[in-house]
Structures are given as structure tokens and as C-alpha cells.
Length: 344
Image 1 (cartoon, rainbow, N blue to C red):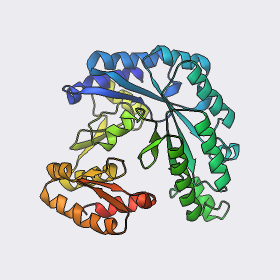
Image 2: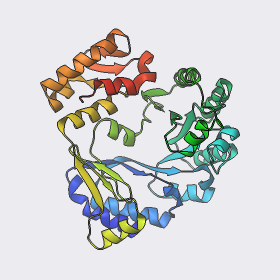
Image 3: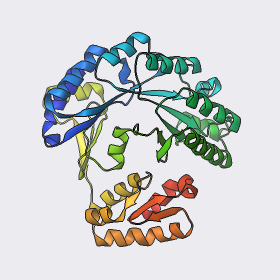
């Protein structure tokens, strides 16, 4: 697999030949199961083939139970300088509900170990809006997070997707989802406590200390080009979106036999506009109307201004000079707001 990924990196060189790489992200699944020789093989290939920013951010996603001290020391000796740890919750009952293999002590221990070996850029993710998760439980989760003194975190409200095991259990009344009022209250508690602890909410679900915003995430939200390598990886160059086949076996075979290993679609102007709105409006920078006009033209600009006006009147969107951002009042409706701004 690693040899196939390195070959794909070579094949993809022309796509970023004139750009400097500011972020490398090992994600999707559990990349931390790779041994350090394999990780370094991939990193060495990237450094060999691409222009690399001196202040590059290199992140690896990990599960708490994967992060033994030896592995952390190996990561530290490589060029990895940011850890993304899949905590989800510091409450054991939540972890049991989500069928996670780690326990809350694993999460706390691995974060402390990571700090002790010298990692000073750590992010974790938390989930709220879980069945039976009380306001008290959520506050305790957040208190543990802030007491750990890390630099970044993401917090997402649980969504119930159709045809999932959770959806079936809810339909059978075996599990009762959190009510919307509780989810909204948990969200506002999240933003208030984050602010009190000097975290900046630079995107609806992402919070960072000053100078610790995720370069990787910002790349998506600012419509920058990126390539994804390996099975199921997605790429975008501003015009074309492409994605690799998901089968490991087929991916390796096709790469090694010079066969097509991906599918792609070219976006229309309206689709690119919608993508721009969806990712931009969620951030603290919002949508700059001059940039929108330059990218998509006068017609798209007029559409946006017209659609945004009613949200401004309802104090859901805030306009400051040429920038439109979602106001605090509108944050819980961010998906509704962005979709209303789309061109359909």
C-alpha cells in the first residue's frame, strides 16, 4: 500500500508543481497504525517531489489507545508536529454508546504523554447532542478538555444518518435522541466556555488558541487546491473534484498497472459558487463580496446580496464593510443559511 501511495505522489506532481505545500495530513481511518518506517517513506517522498513550506504543518490522526509512549517518541523524531486525537468524549458512558475501544483514562493519559514528549500542537474532537448526555455531562466534558491545556479542538453535534444502526434503534424506540433544545443549549455552553478559556471560534465547529488554527482545515475553507492520495482520498483544483476508488486491493492493482484509479467531475460555475458559500460563511472571515464578485461575476454577487438581506434583517448574518459572517444568533442554523444562499 505504501509503495502505491508513493507512486501516486509521483504521478500527481504536475498538479502542484507551482505551489508550496503548507499542510500534510495523515487522516481517514486510522493512519497511526502505520509504523514509523512507512510514515517516513511517505514523508520522504513528499519532500523529494514537492516544494515544502519551512513552517509546514504535519498532522496525523490517532486513536487514544494507539498512542503508546514509544509511538509518540517515534512521531516526535519524524517531522510530524501536530496530533489529532479522536477522543469524542471524556465520559465513559458516551464512549460505550459510540462503541469506542478506548476509555476516558486512555484519552487523558495519551494527551499528557504527548505533551511530555514535546508535542505542543494537539487537537481533539468532541461530540455533543448524544442521547442521555445531560447539560452537566457536557460541562464536565468541556472542563476536562480545558484543564488539559491543549491548543485546538473540534466539537460536533451528533447527527443521525438514515440506514445506520442508530437510526434503526431510534425508529424502534430503543434509543431516544437528545431533544433540539438540549442540543442548542449545549452548543451555546460550548461557545461561551471556549471563549472564557481563550479559544477563538474560527469556524462553526472549530476552536483554536491564537496561532494554532489548523492550516489543513483553513485550506478547505479558503478554497485552496489540494490533492488526496490513497484509497477513497479526495482532491480539488478549483475546477475539478476527483476521488480515488475505495477498494485497497483495486487501488494498488490499478496504480501498479497504470490503470485509472479515480473518478472525477468538473464543477459548473454555480456549483463552485455554492461550494465557496458553504465553506466560507461558516468561518470567522465569512464571505467577502469583492472576492465573490471576482470569482463568480456580477450576477452571482447580486444573488448573494439579495438572499443575504433577509438574514441580515433577522440578525442571523452580520455585514461588516465587504464581509458577511454568520452572527452568533444564526450559528445554530448555519446549514439552513448557507443552503438558502445557494444558486439552484
